Length: 400
Image 1 (cartoon, rainbow, N blue to C red):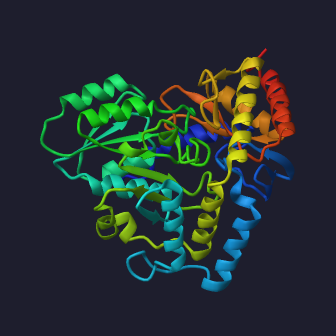
Image 2 (image 1 turned 180 degrees about the vertical axis):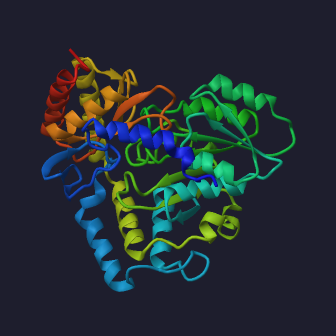
């Protein structure tokens, strides 16, 4: 009888061959102790964190931590139920109110993760006579939501306004249309041309959803995301986001001004059939969101960090995925897996942790190291990071 795990044998063998060379497993790092948003103890060594998505550094904010402690004392450790049964506490409603205030919308729904927010919207909003049109580089949660639903799926070339226009123009008149975009694409850190794409989607009568998981907190005058900076707030039907990046905890959400939006609470399976977030988590999220409304200085410092690191790495000779700093994500392209792993390990041994990415998380043949900056990184830390990249790059022959 066939072993159901046999289809994974090539991957198992590849991973073992990698580990047999003596390198550490890039996908099994354990944080022994977390000291701050930017520092941790990894394998007994203090390490600068440069791969956490903790963009606004809210994980150790005293007000956020205190809110979580207070909710834990007052409401206990968990709800043990879904949102539609016994799982909605006052804290969930307060978190949704904070989101509505932050985004200036009339509706907000909190999910247990950002993944489930995308899973819920994509699988529920479009039926078998409808179309979901999505960027080819869309996040796995968007693809998985499409797979869970019954809609017809149409992909267009990454960030191509022309291809989006062409594919929308080919669709039959019957059926609804949802165009799904992301403000910041997490793998390369590039941003979508939302102004042009939203105009094309509206021309073809499509509804629009924008995932702002990696844009919330530091894009736009109020930190709402790339869609705010692009000036298309009035034309976007749904904004999806997560609490696990700039908000600094865990959870997901959708906000909208659509008058029928609340029906999702009754028909969205990833909302109805999942236990709700613990009270301590929604309390930290609500507190963090309210503070992000007044985080202009943090946003400015994060952009300063991103531009300094991007320029510094380019000046050292690294191949960066974007020509300039487009977001807080900086992706360094490397020629193959061996070079990428060796560079990753050299950086970790020097004292800085970054993410390694390879296919299938990236397009075929693309290997990279991904840095995600934090508003709490000091200027001195950025200087030290550049020194570590210089030493690791030369030691591994990735730069001259």
